[in-house]
Amino acid sequence: MSQSYGYAPRLMQAREAARYLGVSESKFRSLDLQSKRSGGNRLWDLRDLDDYADRLEYNGEKTCEIETNDKAAAAFGMTPNQAAA
Image (cartoon, rainbow, N blue to C red; front, side):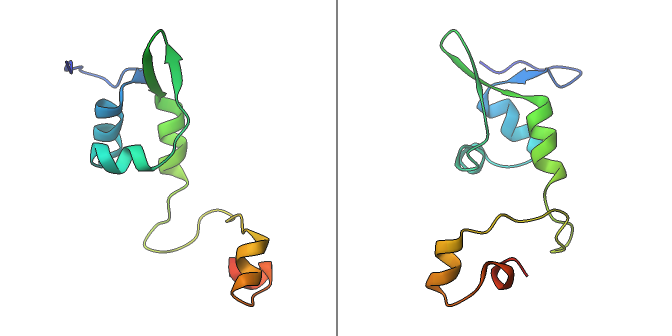
């Protein structure tokens, strides 16, 4: 059962973490973000969620370096530098 807070808790279950990021729960689960375990609960840290949001692009502009898979670049006939551009 979801609780209502006047603030974002440090650790959140998937539903609250998805809401915090502004995405659906199914989209959130597809993001493959790190989680922590407390007993049988899978929890996401507010700091990790903020870090994810900070790394997103603004209006299609790159704000961080993108890691490129060399094998994938080669499969498309590109060098890793071309793939990252």
